[in-house]
Image 1: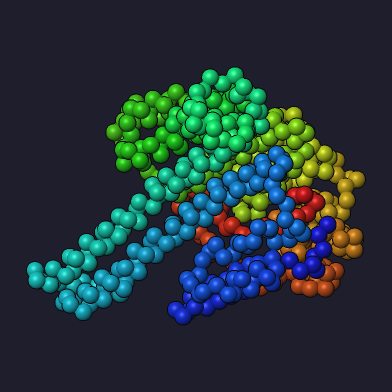
Image 2: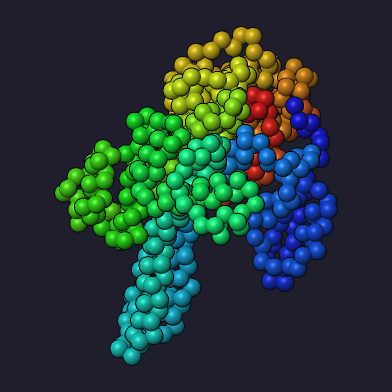
Length: 499
């Protein structure tokens, strides 16, 4: 259990000559001094990430050499790269109408008020007249506004293109990692190499890397269905017939092709490939129609591609890394904890349901119980309390320690049990004050007056720190699953919902 009083790092702020403020989070003073010594510049969002080779909280640098560690790092980078797009979607949905309003209020309206003739004004409307000569400058402003707005309207298309490109980059990295685990499969390769190429290499490993590079390059030129078929045949995992969102997976890439080549106008290729993948709601009558890219569609696309990639790494990890079951289950649980924390419970729910119920379990009882708690919490976060309680009822918690008991009580809304267990949980360091504030499973009781009173009495400090909420996408469009996208720093590792 981490020491809640241990110094973890530093946060520093810097204001430049333009009054812009940047900040950095560093694990030690040496790194902080390096940051301070750099020339001032515009604040960067990257400054919230530690720039040293080791993460905050690590006691020493650990080179990534073992296969489980390489798989873990790849899974972590993939998850963050993909789900961070949720923040981009949320941010642009807020900024697009804001920028249009600013242009109108700070450019068009002042020009009209100054140069045109007011003919009518009431509480709601202002009407101005203009002559042909007056309209010359006004027309230029209106054209700039139309061009600017047209630029804003390309953001959803650019987002989908970027999302697919990010997925493809990591997909090739995933395939490369697991192909390299079995170099013996290349001993019978018929690929030809020139003597010049062979002599330029230092070892047989370099030769194999060269062969894999060619294989990956050829693979990535094919369709995504062909790429998945390659994985099924060469890495021995079943995907197409076992992934229930396969039709949606295929449709995302076909819609991406429409964005890139057809300005979202449906063509025969899109329809035929979607029908082959058994996509619902697609037919030949759609040819010539123009599709849209709503925020709901983009959010769902991020979740579907994230789910596919995470489960692909999980399945390949279990099959190809010897003794990897425990570490694979532990890592997928940690990923799901993070997803719940950044308010993506639906994706976490799908991943946990697959890991727990759609294949043979291969982890310790401790990891299993963590996953069950996270699954139940994801159900509750999705407003499905009935399923949450069924998930909890599937396991006997009577002999569990205080940390689990408090989590179960929170999910059941049992305030009295949470309050009663808090002193012993704190005394045994089963749950620290920071963890009580952080664990998403305790969101259900953290605002209760009784819990707040008990917390301050037990831990000797108030529950709330007064930190303001971050800017989020607060106005989801109609009928959208309104999961708030808010990526934050990961909490301290714990032994209830993550290891």
